[in-house]
Image (cartoon, rainbow, N blue to C red; front, side):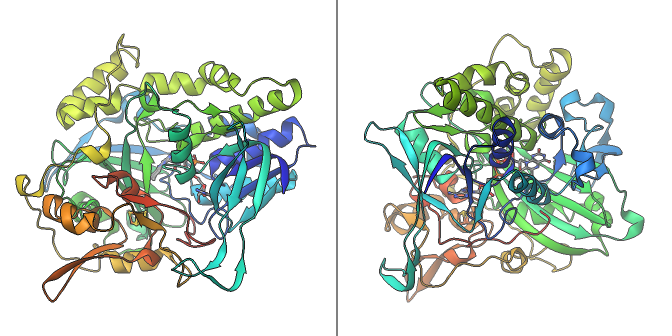
Length: 534
Ligand SMILES: Cc1cc2nc3c(=O)[nH]c(=O)nc-3n(C[C@H](O)[C@H](O)[C@H](O)COP(=O)(O)OP(=O)(O)OC[C@H]3O[C@@H](n4cnc5c(N)ncnc54)[C@H](O)[C@@H]3O)c2cc1C
Ligand code: SF4
């Protein structure tokens, strides 16, 4: 199938590209592929939303029945000790961390609404179709993508009802797969897009939606915390957003540059909820949703080149998230809108796709990322020094200090051997405030068709037992937020088990595995979580 533009990924970046392209030229043929069963079903985000990009894309969004209703009305920042908390005045926070003009939304619902706007303009949207392969022209430029074959068994044989993947060819292909896109990763390698850049940095983010009692609910309230349960050397913190209908969006983000292989990000999140300052808000309430997803945190120093022959790489697939703001939706959207302008000029005036870079540098997205650039690397000195430096950098110098701190290591390089690090004794879940992975994954609605090839591929199948278990106590058992990886002992013999049907597509294993032995590839279409209003 031939199109003017093929877009891979139906998140804020891909959908903004599609809408902007149609606004620029209604005659363009555009298709958008999404691996989830419906738009929004794989979107997981906080989300406090800054409307800057949307104001430019659809200035009349308030009249279009958008799902952006709850304006931030109050803010809190707490430092947590083990049982005490200290409230930090929000007027003392850097302005980038203040949220008074923002909204508490479900990003999944925003994407569903953006998809409606795109379809109304004539964009063809195909949910349930993962792009699994990049197609190249003879001259090495990107020609399009192929979708995943359907109906292949676990050994690669065709089952009844086999349907081969479809080739979608575009004059330009836009990769908008979100953080650690599996095709984006291949493009960065093939075209050396990260040459001269710092190693990319990531975090793992958890989110639960709770329905809480009316007396504890303050619609429009945004709260962030730093400190307990993480130690001074582990980067992370929490968010709690009071949304409509007595719901709170409660979440935790932990930098994937943590060093202790015994650390379990999932259990840190569960433990965090037992802090008196948090427990008193959710106590008596009910957890209704759970999910996890990696975030891309490297910022400007790690941002790869975003153009290549025949294609563009945008949003979190490249790394446009603003870390001190903990926001990537508006920047992802803006990067998509710049992509649309670039493509329009490329198709009409035959300009090279490299004009993307110049447009990006002249836009507010570059200014934001430039000002944000020193925050994440400063936390490699620990929480206290990171906070002091960030205060000086963001409040006094407004991100304009005359130097740039570097990211020194990729996240898979930071684990220390298990026998050099303290074991962590996590409390058992109480099934009221804290839960185990099995009951959590159940809430995600995750499903993958039985008897299909395992989409978590090991480069060396013996490495987990022969090396990673001994040296790092196989950390996949702990960093995976869905319990996909287990080490089972059968008659004294250790076996590495992959329960791929539970995978919630967060991409953490692809990032954190110390030898980069695990590669996440697309499973059969529609597989994965079915998030509602995440
Ligand atoms: C816990 C957490 C909290 C956050 N909080 C906030 C916040 O408060 N405010 C904020 O602004 N941002 C927040 N973010 C960041 C924000 O969610 C991202 O920056 C934003 O979603 C990036 O948009 P995107 O379009 O680049 O990618 P995504 O939103 O990830 O969308 C990518 C889409 O592409 C699809 N896809 C991927 N690969 C393929 C493929 N091969 N074929 C077909 N489809 C594919 C995916 O299923 C997905 O639907 C948060 C993120 C997390 C994880
Ligand atoms: S298997 Fe990998 S991608 Fe899937 S949920 Fe676990 S860590 Fe995330």
